[in-house]
Length: 341
Image (cartoon, rainbow, N blue to C red; front, side, top):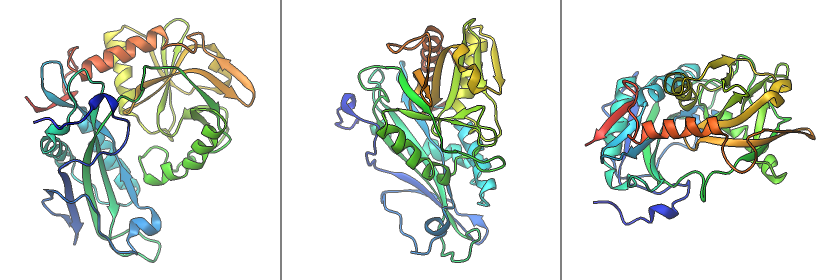
């Protein structure tokens, strides 16, 4: 039975649900894992994660579709990306097939928290892993915990989508050969000062250039960029230090296969931004946030799509991808994982 929640007033915040999945890695192997009631994590004061930030995470969503199913969007890609994050941080990989099964089990155990179709709300799922045994010398932990909880969240844009204003940041997000391509907690910790500073100065987000030359567009720290040229080509920045967004990769397929757009995945330079007709940020939370203006140290780059609404191509991309996620449009094979009929 659905929980008595005012789905329409939900924000993007944490609401405790009934069950979460927990598995422990000890003596070189993972245990069976189980669904538990207790939302609290107990660990040593010297746990590896608390001393040396050895942790990574993922984010995905479950939806109620038009025909009443509860589904998840491409969880296999989250499993694969988390495996890459773990390998880079010298953490044991939670097996990818078990990751997907944990998504199914965790959502099933919290079905009453999946918001109704048409509410604009969804069930956000947060898998994460961290070093849990005491570590005082700088080295990887020996023991780890993998956890997954979910929480109902409201639509990212309350009151409708409005294009945002962002700035070119003076801070660096990721070093060449660093950890920009994985979803490590430490990447997000170092971005907090930059985002607070941006908000204090009236900007919604930071555009981080590449740290080596500061001439190329990378990402915002929480989302990948998409650009639309004046002739309707989708352009996405290519870099080894960008997190490979599942939303961005999906939009590239949608653009080409569903909308017949030309797609380019290439390096994008700051000095070509004024040539684009539309700009957006893409990620799990908002799907696409339209960008109306970029401030590059006093030089304003205003996109022809304007500050009132999404640009026409961005809107088509958004409507098509959300239509696929919500079951209104037939999905490519393997994109939708049905959790409950």
